[in-house]
Amino acid sequence: MKNVIDNSKKGLYSLWYGVAAMLFILSCYSCEKDNLDVQEVFPFEVKVMPVPKEIGTGETVEIRITIVSNGNYNGNQFYIRYFQNEGDGSLRQLPLKPYLPNDLYPLLDREFRLYYLSKSIVSQNFDVWIVDGFGNEKQLNFQFNNKKLTPPIR
Image 1 (cartoon, rainbow, N blue to C red):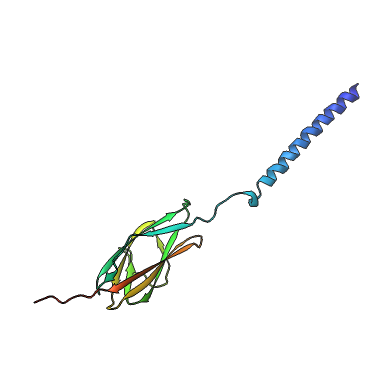
Image 2 (image 1 turned 90 degrees about the horizontal axis):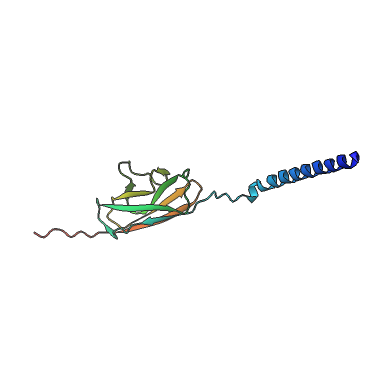
């Protein structure tokens, strides 16, 4: 009779060891990176308020921009760069110095204002890129016709 009790205890212990081993194996499979849904890329949109269609030499246009992200990842940094395609002018955020073409500058806020100063008597065209830390980028194009100034009447 003692052998029957000892064998049933051994069987019970074997069952518990088997259950523990199965739980361990299942927990290892559930921790594989391929099965985790970790979002590493957060797409974003760039909204721009309307700007004038014309600009005169020496005039400045304010460009209001807001970056709207689909997710909220605190570690994501945004950057800006621009390139002047036609005409001559400078782009900056106050109180910073004017941006150099094709250089990348960090953006401190997701809502900001740019100021474009016209230095040209012809039409002007430039592109602005907003880039995030994940490599996503949005391109904005700005075109200004030359404002025909009429001389004052005497």
